[in-house]
Image (tube, rainbow, N blue to C red; front, side, top):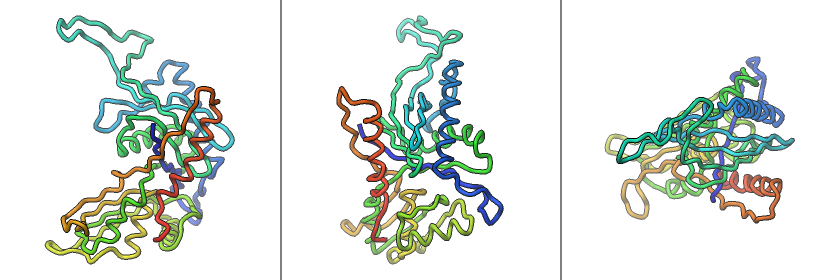
Length: 303
């Protein structure tokens, strides 16, 4: 089962220079997941956990945190994808085979995913099969975290982005003719791992209090841009971790117009090998160790 990665960010609504509270840091993310754990446990106790699920975009399925355990440097547990079932009838006779009753929660097609969230890197690794689409997963997580965020950090916002492969845009970077490029970025937490133009742009966004930035370039009605500038490439690099990028360009190999969308290329590491006698702590540790590799795969060090 592959592992997918989500960069989660809790960001101040105002910068410190504007009287804002600043970033929440590792302890803040721990507090956020502690509150999420409390909400999940309470809902389970009241048998209302299935009601906390958020419906996945363009799907009949819902997604919910099934268990959340908090440790000093990470949180881990399970997510469940499921379909709500109120009534089941026989296909041929129409006879009612099942009807949801009080105190019961009818669901079908349950699928569990193991997650590990690193408080320091604020990245969640999710291991499983039959993942929701990237956009559906981002939307569901953003909605699920609204309540714990409201309970812990009212002066902050929450957003998340699935990490995407840096090598996915290598062909676009060498294209000589680009019809259109669009990039959307979310103001990020400080990150010392970035280099060059990407690092300068990220710092400027932070210093100016920018939460989101949208950048577009396009050629004339029948023309093209003569390749991408250094700074446009830096925007696209940042999108691998903090947003998304779209482009239409002439494929250098085929001379045909081609489309690129970063969300079509999520970073996926091979699943952690789990043996029969492996303890839970060892499994969680192994999954956590893959986060650094995934983060690096979402960065082009040459930009």
